[in-house]
Image 1 (cartoon, one colour):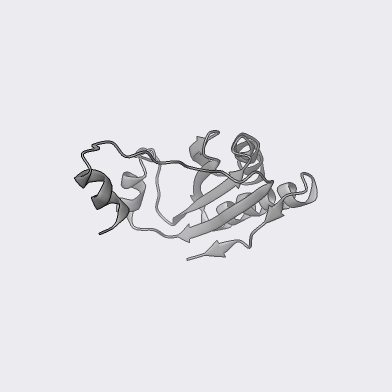
Image 2: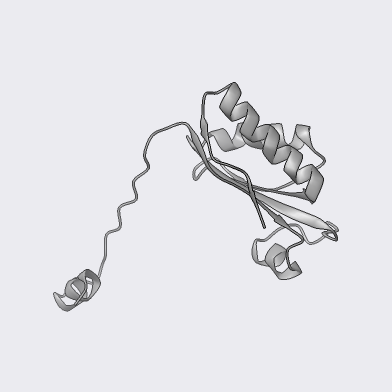
Length: 127
């Protein structure tokens, strides 16, 4: 019996989940998805009016979470990319554009975070 079963059998119908963020200055995901299926754009809720032919999706997560706002600004200035999603509470950034522009934008964000902000930065990955 796992903890969920034990809680439910004990008569408690509410489960408390605690999410913990470790403080730090870091980019934990910097990934580029080249030529994704159209359904992925739809499932992510990205703008359907943009032509996603020969495009890519760049996704990044960072902490502190507010850094996503700075990252969005840098990404949009570094490459001809569209802002798909930015969340200053979770530290998530999603951008779209051609593969080369998305690579340039993600690279610029990682370089700035590492060299100017002193962040620990993961490698940029690509599928």
